[in-house]
Amino acid sequence: MYERFEMTSKYLEFIKRFPTLEWDYHNISANPNINMDIVNNNPQIPWVDIMLSINNNITINDVLLHPEINWDMFLLSGNPSITFEDILNHPNLDWYYFSVSRNKNITYKIVKSNPERQWNYVSLSENPSITFEDVITSLDKYWNFACLSFNPNITWDMIKSTPEFPWDYSLVCLNPNLTWDIIEDNPNVKWNYDVLSHNPIITWDIVCNNLDKNWKFSNLLRNPNIKWNDALEINDYFMQNFDTLRDDYMDEDDTNILHNYFKNPNVMPNIDELIDLVAKKHYIRNFAQNYLMYDRYYHSPQYKRAESKKKHDIIYCELIKKSCTPARLYQWHEYAMELNNWMTSLGFR
Image 1 (tube, rainbow, N blue to C red):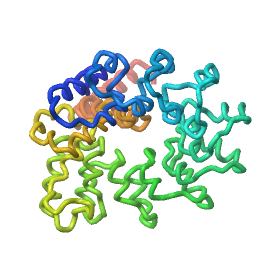
Image 2: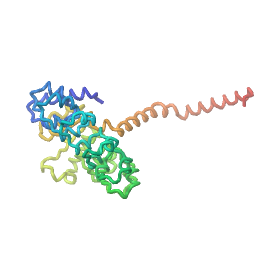
Image 3: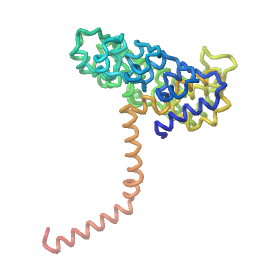
Image 4: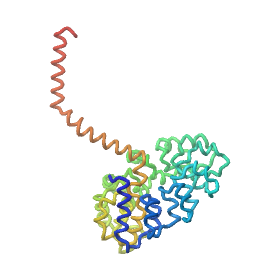
């Protein structure tokens, strides 16, 4: 995996390699591979002020040091680089509490300690700092269960144990705590395979073994669990079955969905193989929206658990499985028998 700095530099270098292309600087300005140093050092690029406001690298100091930028306070209020301390320290700025409520730095403890502020419970419901305990202990509040359905602090056990709550099962399909085993064990749930295709719990192997499901192949190509070789197979499969799999919005002559892989954080190592495609407008737009290694999946507990499992499996295969062969176990057994007989002969047993 590329380090963040390397990814950031590669992202900008790639854009600069093709200055004549109609780059989507609207989304590039918001991309977390861009920071204020890059903005300041590249004044020739037409940065978009409103989108810099949601760039995760923008800090309150950047805002204060650059009054010439037309900051969008609605978007800036939800920026995860902005803390509640920043908000308290700068009451002169026009903070929007609909967006502040979504900001992951806002905990329910902060909400309860500041009841005079205009907290929005729809936004709070999707805030990853909100826990199920927060919801249960404050059921008199206007929680939005559609947003809670994909909140990373909500697990399947919580959802299953509270059928009286109006969970949105299409949005549950985005929940990172979902597993394929859960889906298979609950066939009566109306799973949305269109949405599920984007969830990193889904692999190409799972799709291949369940082709009877209504997968969305364009979403699958954006899935961070899909690697380049998978993407090529997916695109081939789609083209071979174009008449049955095509989307209504697609052009009649557009039988290639590979442009969706330009939103996949795994695209950069193979970007040189895709140069001929880059000039197309929708490829450029998708690449501009690609967060690469800043993709939230790579910073989630689910990804860390998956990586730990991979390491565990490697250790098991390389050390335990190979060392515990029948021949070695037999040798250990023979040695244990000899040791037991020797201890007995000495009067220890």
